[in-house]
Every structure is written in structure tokens, then in C-alpha cells.
Amino acid sequence: MYPGKYATTRADEPCFIMASSGEVVTYGEYEARTNRLAHLLRDQGLQRLDHYSIFMENNSRYLEMCGAGERSGLYYTCINSHLTTDELAYIVNNSDSRVFITSREKLPVVREVIDLCPAIERWLVVDLPGEEAPFEDYLSAVSAYPDTPIADEKQGSSMLYSSGTTGRPKGIVRQLADVGPDQALALMQFLLGQWRYREGQTYLSPAPLYHSAPQGAVGLTIRVGGTAIIMERFDPEEYLQLVERYHVTHSQLVPTMFNRMLKLPDEVKHRYDLSSLEAVVHAAAPCPVPVKEQMIEWWGPVIIEYYAATEAIGFTSCDSHEWLAHKGTVGQCKLGVLHILDDEFNEVPNGTPGTIGFEAPAGLTY
Image (cartoon, rainbow, N blue to C red; front, side):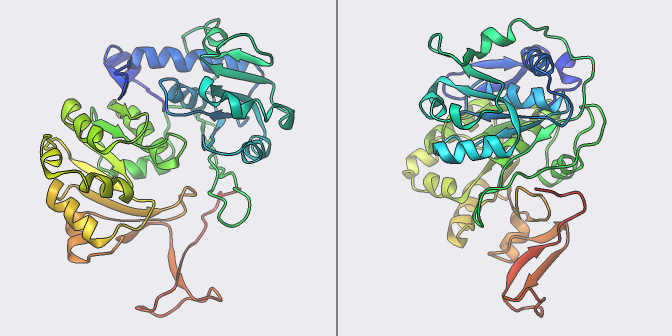
């Protein structure tokens, strides 16, 4: 989420655009926004490797809240905006968050967790409807701070939580070097090549920004000086409209979204010009072979599939040509060491079904 040189070289160009409202935030505006919040967090006493949380729907303030952490050496935890009170409180407390940022839309849930989260020092709310302790209006709070960088900028990162399929969700900590924010994480550099990103691209984001994949995809788009189109929520025809309107070059979806678009009437599916698409990535769930076949036939060989996890301990991928040659594959292992294991976690012979296991690299902690 760090704009780097583009804050100057593309100051008047769109950093991101909100799909439904059409609100445009330029690189210059994004730079100023992230700086103000970084100053507030420092003024609150948060130093390198400290934590804060974000609990919101997709809106025009979400990205700056991530960008501020990435330029101040902090961990920020984006929390699923559909969690219950107890689930929310657990993550806030477990992450050792000291500042909590939310929105007017989420206040009904947040009001119920205040007493459950005694370590939170400040509760900031985007578009707070009126005075209500202990909440502060976010814009009023940050407007008091400079729009220039803090003096001690450091590399920061998200600290997202696992899905909790085996017990409580676990915070995934990536080790941060004591370097400036212009030094991207090694994982981000790897994904640039895998997802075929390039300078000045236009990325369409149809998913909730609290997920790791949209986080990485939008963040990388900003780091290469592109424009991200942020959908507040996914709608299949609106997605196609946005591709045509903004000449979208890159995107990332899940198979359910493919399926919903394929169910559109033919006259709707073929109404929009999708020829600008260069790389469309999908993951997160198995994609049925017939669905993938239809998508490649419709959009051409621009679809890239990968298999991975928020922990980023392994990564497999395949492009459309590789998939057509081995339908159903999720590709070859490109990152990490992969094993196929039996129920006792012993490696099985080639060609034998089993459970996929990635070796955890040094430095991964929960």
C-alpha cells in the first residue's frame, strides 16, 4: 500500500476509484491521507512492530488505513467485517491492538465490544454520526496532523488471521526487516511476476479488502503506480461494465464469481468489451472444470490459477495453456516445498492421493 515515487510522479493521477460512487483518490491525496494517519499513530505512542485493527466494509478510507501502517513499521490487522461480537473481540485482543478503526456502518457491532477490549486506547470511526464516547470521528482526528511523512518511516505489514478451521483463528506474523517502506516484502516481489503485474496497470478488485488476496493485489497495484478500481460489493454485470469503462488489465476473482457471470444472459455477457484484460487470477476454492473451460473460451487464455494460503508458506500456479493441457490442475509448486501425505503424515508415492502439506519456512510465527 506504499505509493513510493508515484506520490510525486503521478500525484494527479488516480490511485484508486470507488466503483459505485465513482470517487477518485489521486496518488497525491493518498500520500497525504496515509501520512496524516501515520502521524496520529506515532503521536498515540505506537512504535515499530506495534499493532492496530481495521474493521470496516469496503469504502474510500480503507486503503489509507493500511498504507499508514506500511510506512510506519506497524502491523495492521484487517478483520472480517461480518464477524460476531465475540469473534471480533477475540481478534482485537489477541492481536494486541492499541487503536481500533471502524465505520458508521459497523457501529452496532462495535458498541458491543468496547467493554471486551480494554487495551484499545482510541476508537476511531469513519463518518461518526454524532458525539458518542469513547468514539472519535476519524476525519476530525487525522485532520490535525501533517500531510508529510513521519521522520522515522519503516517497513510495516498486515497481520491477518487464519480462517480458524482448526480452532481459533491465528494471527500470521511476517518478519519485518528494519528498513524503509520503499523496500517491499520478498513475497510481494514474487507475486509481481506470478500475477504479471506491470507499471501503470488498471486492477479491478471485486472482493472484501479484509482478505489477504485483495490486500496483496491492491497493494501491489499501488506499488507499481497503477489504478485500482474498488467494488463496494460484487455484482456480475457491474463487473463487466467496469472492465469496459476503465479498460481493466488485471483482476482477481474466486470461482463463485466466474459462475455468477456465466449465468448472465448471453446478450449481457457479450455486451461489454473485455479485450483489455491481460491477466485474471483466481484462487481460494476449487474451480469446476466446465466453469474454467467456459471462462477461457469467453475471455481467452488470460486466466491464471494459484493455490496458496494466507501464511504464504507455499504457492502453486498455472496459466491457461498449462491448465488446458492438464485440466483440473492447480499447477506446479513455485514457492516453498510441497509434500503429499497420508493420514499419519508420511509421504506417499507419486500418483497416490493424499493431503497437501507445505514445509513452514523459517520466520513464520502465529
